Each structure stands twice: as structure tokens, then as C-alpha cells.
Image (cartoon, rainbow, N blue to C red; front, side, top):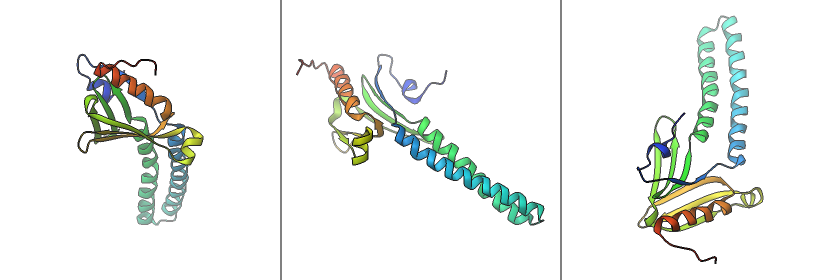
Length: 171
């Protein structure tokens, strides 16, 4: 089975405690672009074919190249969402994104100073938001468009408390 970045970067005694996932709104935005670019790609391919039939080969090649870009970009958008990982382990908080080139942001659990939720009007109504982890110095990790951030935050806080050996007395 495919092993993600988080699983592949775990230390021998490190375990994944919480995984955040994208809200459907993030997928909806991507689907909108996929449909729009897909429609543009179909038009480009049709126009390129017509130009080729009309013996305008140079214009047909250029239009086909644009159609190719419109065809490939939606796959890029999909893969970017699909391959993004947001997790809290027993040692750190990890955000990984990227397909070929990978960008990661990590903060060790013992360096986290605050966890904030940023929710827009629509995010509050539809149940999504961003979770921002601030660490000592300028360290910062943000999980974007997380599904149910108000449910995820306590889970992450509990995982952090367990990792640091802090017990919570039913507050």
C-alpha cells in the first residue's frame, strides 16, 4: 500500500494520534476549476482539430498545447488536495503538501505555544476552518480548510497533553 510522508517520517516510537482532513468545500472549489478547465480543454481540442482539418497546422499545434495545459492542470489540483497530509503525532504537528516538490511544516509538540482556529462566516455555517499552531520563535504551522476544526482541536490538545505527560482532570 502507498505510504504517505507522515508514515514514512515517523520515528520508531512515534505514532499518529490525529489526522485532519479537508472539508468538502475545498474539494468543491477544486471541482469548480476542474469542470471549468475541463470545458475549456474540450473547446481547445475541438478548435485545434478544426484548425488541423482546415490546414492551419501551426495554430492547431498552439491551440492543442493550450488544451493540453487545461487538461493537465485539473489533475494537478486534484493530486495537490489528495496528497496533502495534516497530522499530529506523539512528537510533532505536520503539514505536508506538494506532488513532485514537497513542502513541509512541522513543529515539535513541546514547542507549541498556542492553537488557534480561524473561521470565516461561511466556514462557521458549513463547518470548516483553519487551525493555526504557533510555536516558540517564528514557528508556525497551519492546517487549511479542515473539516470540523472545533472537533479536531480538542483531539490535538489531548494528544499534545498525552505526549507531554499532562493529565486533564475532567474540566
